[in-house]
Amino acid sequence: MMASIAAVDAARKQKIDVRVTIIEKNPFPGRKLLATGNGRCNFSNETIEEKNYRGDLKLFRSVYPQFNNAKTISFFRSFGLESFADPAGRVYPLSKKSESVLFALRYQCEARGVSFLCGTEISSIAFSAEKVLLNHTLSFDRLIIAAGGAASPGHGTDGKMFDLIRSLGIPVHPIYPALTALILKEYPKTLKGVRADGTVKICKDGSCLGEDSGELQFTEYGLSGIPAMAVSEYAAKNLPGDLTARVELAPNLSKESLFESAVRFKKDFPQAAPLLFLTGLLPEKLARWVLQKAGSGQVQTMGDLSSAQLKKLIEAVKTVSFTVTGVKGFAFAQVTAGGVGSDAVNPETLQCKKYPGMFFCGEILDVNGDCGGYNLQWAWSSGFVAGKNCIK
Ligand SMILES: Cc1cc2nc3c(=O)[nH]c(=O)nc-3n(C[C@H](O)[C@H](O)[C@H](O)COP(=O)(O)OP(=O)(O)OC[C@H]3O[C@@H](n4cnc5c(N)ncnc54)[C@H](O)[C@@H]3O)c2cc1C
Image (cartoon, protein in one colour):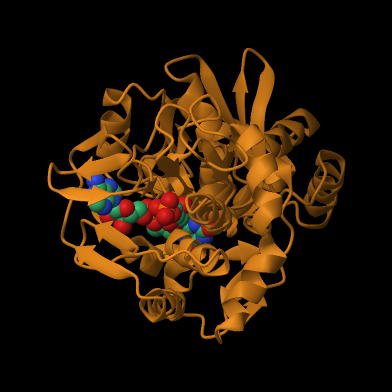
């Protein structure tokens, strides 16, 4: 929809008569958009830097400045969609409803005469003398592929478009699920449902591949929540392999200060159970498990814990290591890492090098961002660039 709007606007400026059709296999376009940001559509972020993205950053560097977060916010405001940023800088529509974004985009398309051909899946693409032929019947001068990636197939993005693109001889960088959950070995299912603040690091051969902090969600198979999702891509790219997830709890307290608190608690309340000390720091289920992990599950009172046992207890709060055996696949993932890169498209225009009548935008390109509005921002920025340039 963004690419269509940009295409019509660019055509009008150049006084070119253009007809644009959005072909969507779902009954309506933007189904995934409705699910974003827990239904609130976190569509951009106040602070966007290269470090928020991974993949083929040549594309990001050329495309993003052409239609950045400020331009995106004022673009939406120009047709009445006001927004606000939460304290973390995540930008949402003022209504806190993703349908506001979808309605606004759809109206802007309709107002520009864009047609919608819904319930139609593109399953073949062919090129002949300056024309693009879709499904052997639909003929166009230009084609913009905005088919998303392979993540969240329930929203229409099953990754089949990657196969179609490959079959045209266009290279596609290997794809992985990103912003997904970690599957852990020897993980206690009793932790299911626990939420706690912490840091998670993905480590291989002693070095840290990536880390993130925030609220961790313990599930029946492993770890979810924003920090686990943020590092899942590093796990996905290095599996199978010897990977560890190091979880550090009580992130705002140093080992030293925790140890001092433990010593003080022991002195003041020697008859109290060690679990009581830990429940001052962690949810009870997690506290029980940390106590077992530290080997002090049978110790009755704080007074019975030696200094070495106290140290071990604090060590267990600060670093728990799990073996990572997998990540939840594309069905669970929010985005796709990998895709069409700068070897296949011109990074300035997103025009396909092999077939000049074809352009790409959005998640199908090899650019993926952090949680926080970065992926939709990429869709807007790249949609604008592909739409504008396909008119030339
Ligand atoms: C649950 C969830 C929550 C998310 N929340 C956020 C968030 O809050 N903020 C954020 O920035 N990002 C979020 N994302 C990621 C973001 O939604 C995507 O990165 C973004 O939608 C990608 O936009 P796109 O236009 O490239 O593709 P999509 O939005 O995936 O749209 C692609 C469209 O192409 C259609 N299609 C695919 N193949 C064909 C075909 N062969 N023929 C016809 N039509 C086809 C699909 O049906 C789909 O409608 C979330 C993702 C999910 C799954």
